[in-house]
Length: 276
Ligand code: FE
Ligand code: FE
Ligand code: ZN
Image 1 (tube, rainbow, N blue to C red):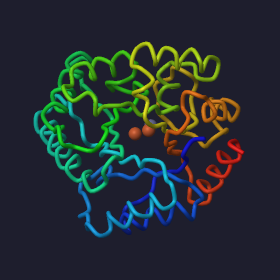
Image 2 (image 1 turned 45 degrees about the vertical axis):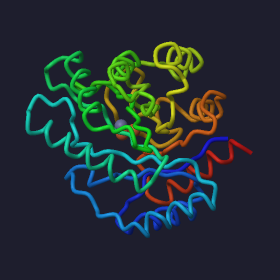
Image 3 (image 1 turned 180 degrees about the vertical axis):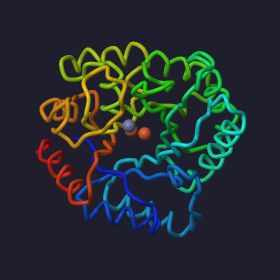
């Protein structure tokens, strides 16, 4: 089995997200640690965080996957953008201690003209400055579609970041199916081959979570436009094979498909149906 859920808004607090996901029929979820575009974060009330933890364990949820802000660019060429990103990363990682043993995933960054190699160095430097030995969070680098100057469009680039991070035992990867497909990995025609390649380059033990999205574009398009399950170029048969693949069992699968609540409820039901 896999754990399935979608992105939720933190507007009404943390325990409220757990209750919402129970109502949706899911058993994991994702949320933005702060406004994804503006960068502001909501204060955490310790009792609310504890209430969520109790709810998650009572209902046997999989690990939740917090998502860093889209505006956090750890390898921006603009110094103030990068400083701002470092500040967000530091605050996020400390706030994550309210939710021990969960995941924090983020987009590695966009090198904005400096080249992928420089980007990789700056991202690793940021992680080395802000991760701390006592932390209880596993930080996940997201596989990227390769839009613009995004770093992390290949398994090799993610490996290079991991190799440079001191606390790499606290690092993993979030496998976004739309991004991997858009990045040029044929998960429709050769899922086994792609996962074997992931294993060789990064190691499947680092694959901690899946962003479960269909894609509006063909393989290798580098576009990053998500589609509803079964309505894109990946298609329902391949989505099902991914969810049932032995290498991906017991992981949180997060829907980031363009849906309203009822659409997510339907997709969660579809995925759970595959597991019966
Ligand atoms: Fe993402
Ligand atoms: Fe994603
Ligand atoms: Zn995306």
